[in-house]
Length: 365
Image 1 (tube, rainbow, N blue to C red):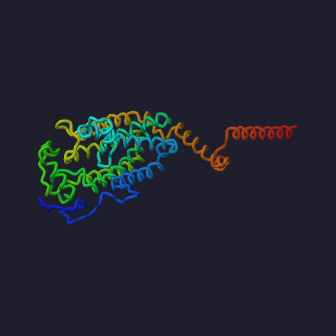
Image 2: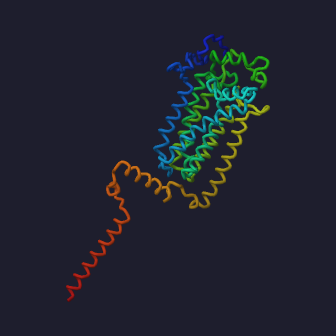
Image 3: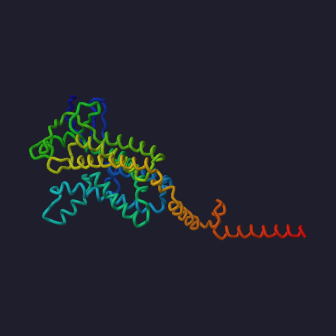
């Protein structure tokens, strides 16, 4: 195993076996005395890219993008709240205080980290699906779109962990092994009696490289996005991409979580790892069961995007948008006639037929 020297610069990051060295300050810049962190920038970038990719493709899933805006915004808010609550619940002793005020503000203070990805997913789903119910948006097609956005956001957002030198794993001699000033500081402190690594029975050496878990998850999520984007045109039933996401991400997290040194624990059980295993198994079983049903009776599994309801909702929004823009003649331009126009055409046809019959009668006379 390659040994590293003590790194005195907390902002320095090294990949010893590759000969790479970086110096990155977690604070990107300051505006009006407010420090803007790279962590937040990466999360915002991942969210922006997810929205830019998913919104133009909602129509393919039968979803009206205008109706879905509220669900997306609500999902983002729910995701932030859920991620924080998930972390706080499993680290309650770090926030609990005799003073309610101190406890409350400690929970709100996220500047020192403390977000759980599964809490974020759960929170986003709860709030987003409630809004979908209110807005009459079909949930399964919406989730099929959303999970592709999840993978983009997770794949980009994990680089915030790289800058912060957090969410790393146990020691490794892999060529990808990394270390840094903050990583060494954390290991040195947490391996002391009473430290979390010591209490969890980990054997860590501060001078040795560690697994870059952020990198594993980022690459896996981005590969998953490519897979789901490819399969999105071939899906056979609504909810298929959701199940594929659950299996793909659950498998990765079940493995990588076992390498991490900062897992949320219940006794000796890694919470996120246990949850990942359950999610993976459940999604695989559901895909097998539904797959057999689709083969036996494919006509029972109609994609929502092909239904009349979906088409009418999207058309309704399009008409409303064109009306708001003052273009009342758009229907004629695209060949869509109002019901009265259709009836008028029918009446014209009847008149033409009457004239033809009259001419024939005259000829016979």
